[in-house]
Length: 72
Image (spheres, rainbow, N blue to C red):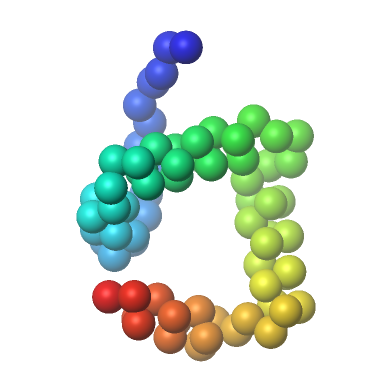
């Protein structure tokens, strides 16, 4: 399979986190994005659904921020 490189804008923190994970984890992230983008739904539709499901399960922006802060 021929692969092509693309660029997406992310926060500096996300870029740093991506660079710090192992090549194996980076590959998993790339595979995840590939799968997400080849589905019938758009990425934004899937992200909205994931956000709605997380919110329905009690996830709040404050909780997410706390989780992300604790990982550093």
